[in-house]
Length: 174
Image 1 (cartoon, rainbow, N blue to C red):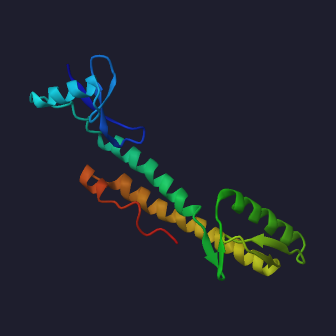
Image 2: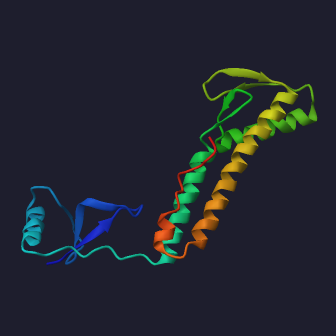
Image 3: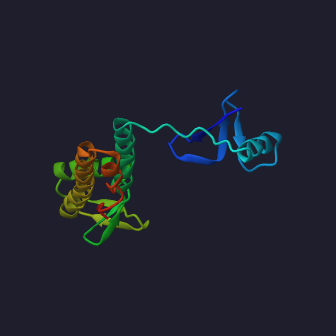
């Protein structure tokens, strides 16, 4: 009998479970089931589960780039402040803001009652609407700019230590 260490779908080590190699069954490591007790007896006999395979640098970079894209999206959609107004920056809000700006460009007298991140409403006239749209766009672009910096660093990493040293959670626009 042999067992292997396994990961979840995100690639994170599952401490509470191993895979029994003979049949692929998942065995809890700390339960009181017959399978779990057999696994602990197997460990007690001096055995060790097969470790996870070490990913290639290319595989590690690919995983890191995917995590970075998710991190950028979280920063992009976390909201921003423009002229003291706290604004959502999710994709739907960005699209609605674009539509409101188009309406404002077509009619400079256009004003819209806009919902802020805290739930309050404010009237945005043409000039304020343009300023808000520019502020939100600057926030979104700065998130993509930060992602581009980190992508370049990830691609340039020469080994796994250099790759791990890249902090994808630091220095995002707030």
